[in-house]
Structures are given as structure tokens and as C-alpha cells.
Amino acid sequence: MFSHVMIGTNDLDRAKTFYDALLGALDVRPARVDRHRIFYSTKTGTFSVSKPINGQPATAANGGTIGFAASSPAQADAWHAAGIAHGATTCEDPPGWRESPAGKFYLAYLRDPDGNKLCAMHRPT
Image (cartoon, rainbow, N blue to C red; front, side, top):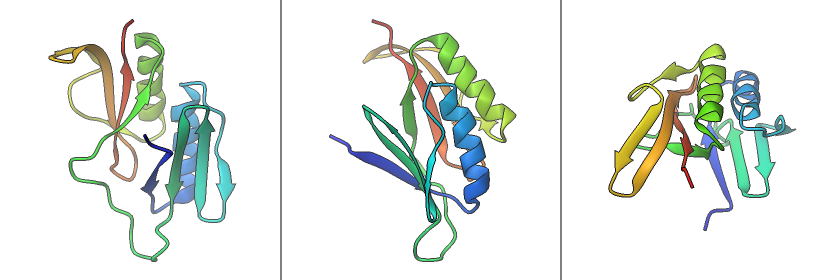
């Protein structure tokens, strides 16, 4: 359904350092830089961070969350720790199991240095 997700940043170098560490915890290679954007590509999709093309400041989506798949609770915790170590702030509840009508999930939430809300999710099989 989705080919890619792109979010904005006001500091591309800071974003690259942050997302290289954060996504590295999920075994994703460091970003490829293309002018004012960075790209992380895997066989399941592409995540990109860009300075706004219109020259206006980047802002975080109110109510938006970007979710990344984690292979285990330990990987979600490593993702969360990498984010905190590189300037993220924790949000929502601490990392842990959540029950919902859709099932049981292990979730870890962060806000990146630009305020974007992120989540690492492990779905048990």
C-alpha cells in the first residue's frame, strides 16, 4: 500500500545522526544522502527525512505517528535506547506490552529531535 514515508527536519545533519542510530538498532543501514534529503531503504519500504522544499520550517504532525517494525521486545528496547541517547524524548507510556482489540503488541514511543512521534512495534507470532 505504501511506497515510502517522508518527514521534515530543520537540521539534516542532526536528523541523519539521529536516524542512523535509531534505525541501526533495527538493522537498517545508514542513510543515503541526496541534496536536502536522506533515505533509508529496505525490502519493505523507504523512510526519508527532508528539509522542506518550500523553505518554510519543518513541523511535526499533530496526531501523526510513524511506526517501525521490531523483531522482538529487546530490539524495540534497543531502538528506544538509541533514540534517547541521540536526542529523542520518550512519550506515551514506557516501552512495554499493550493489549488492544487487535491483539497484544510490544510498543516503544519516542519524539525525534524535530518533534515527530515515532513507535517501534513488535507483533508476536
